[in-house]
Image (cartoon, rainbow, N blue to C red; front, side, top):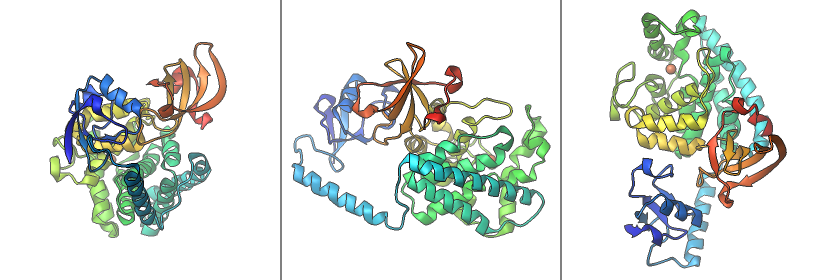
Length: 399
Ligand SMILES: [Fe+2]
């Protein structure tokens, strides 16, 4: 049941259904979340929110706080249910232990994708087995620990953008599909479509594809045709499912009809079409290109949220931000203590308070012995994300 209560009556264990305030007026990524600690209640009150709606089916009731035993039984039953759902899935591991394996997977994926994209340019056939093998290793790594491949896929060489972008979109979409609780077959189809979403670019001339300067109107039109070229290519191959095809067809569409090739609006865009549109833009903006420097992930996510009402839909964009985190692993941040730290672990329940590794003291202008802090359990806060090149610190070297 949904109940409206005064914000100062909130208790740990309640589930907020709605904050009764526009999202731009509060610091929370979503207006729907459970209250894990008192800091969250303080943040709600500090944001000037007077009332909230709580969902008593998903958290504690106002008058009737559940006895501890009832909560414990419910948690245990949910844990059991999750364990049953996880049977057959790869076991989750830490970021550090997945990172080494993820580096090998990334190298192999790069080599395979580069080869098959060249093959397509020369009119050779593309076997589904080749794609399935890459997709399987990416999916398994993402299921073990999504942050390992997601962090690696942000590193791209400018001259290898086209195929590295395909791998990044595949990694991000697989993590997104997992965060959306899609079943394994749906996730596999999403990963296949994502890996091949820009395959049509192999029918665009390399002069246009790799042109360092701005494109002329005609070149721009030709570049946009990569969507139709991709659809034709994959139709010819004949093994691509509808769900995967929707990613190829719709990743440049926008819900306000300004996208291409068909100018689809609102519900005409499928869920995977919207998801791929957000992910494609996120990866393009956070990558170095021959004509522009990359944007910081945190800044990019803010821009995506700003554009979401017209371009991708707010719900899907919020879900994507929840998936990658406001401060993705590897982001360099400035704490309110004046120290610089690297985000080393995400917590979906505390997106503004990830686990960080303090590496530099700006006051004294020197490196410090790295130490980890869980910001959700600390009084320290993140002031802002910092561009690594501005302070000449490579956050990756601290992961
Ligand atoms: Fe594209």
